[in-house]
Image 1 (cartoon, rainbow, N blue to C red):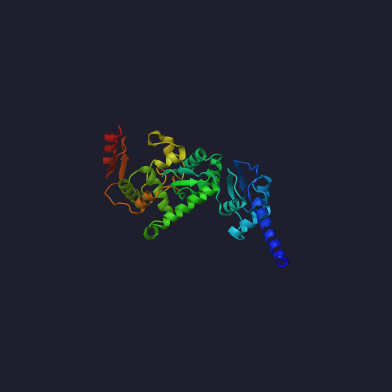
Image 2: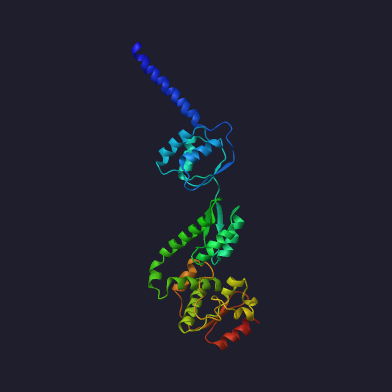
Length: 315
């Protein structure tokens, strides 16, 4: 019997170790329900373990670090804002922080096609608690035209920079789907996006967008000013009926009445349909167009017909 005592002692020790590990892996009795914690970028596992311990979320920083290493090797933890709403084991918490399971419900936000960066900032600031719309706009307006309008699901803690990065990534992905059409166009990519941003604001259906794109490209080709009103909304927030003579005479690289060619940059962030309309425009005999009070577009082959349309549909 004496020869079996060491085995008995080892078995007892293993049981004790397991009990200790289990105990220190469980959540503390005073777990702070509803606790929100921000893990900053470049935070080390040790720093996170220390903060989790100080907040009373885990019992053992050592075991937490072991579990993170088991789940994620030396890749560390994911930055972000985490919600710890119910007591969880150190194993579960290690998994969550290793793979970025933050526990916060994502916010659904729809950015309409043709939104400007300023309009995007207002939408985001209204939907996301604490979101800094001004900071977003300061950076986003530099990427006007290249932020893809779509429905997004953002974390509640998302930063302006992260939103811009996400929307830019989606824009690039969308452009990759039409790269062959872009490559065969006789217009530069920049000009295509600028034109698409105008077409987006001028019309809301594919057929008319393609006709209008054809008219505007044709005007540029012969050196005729575009004479479109949409840039004035971008500049001053004014619709066609509110534009004054002073506005039309204003010195601005966006004034398409005073300057020939395209504006200096996009006036909105176009959707894929407007971009395709700019690439697949329709050649027609028309040189002029206008929208009536019901939203229907009317075309004219010369200025006299255009004036007649104005008298017929706008007065």
